[in-house]
Image (cartoon, rainbow, N blue to C red; front, side, top):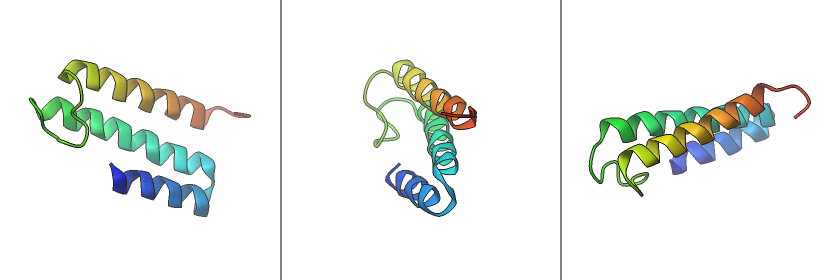
Length: 74
């Protein structure tokens, strides 16, 4: 996740804020898939609450950022 955040920041710097937001949204959605597959306390960097609460929060945040990044004028 740290690498994804740094990559999103660099993409925003080089290609614009919309691209950086899309990279961040993709990273959150990939983290949701990883959290769904890795049951229990894995993956350690994103396992905070129960599996389904973590997945719901990651998908919600990733989806919201994706929608806003593709919205004109936001």
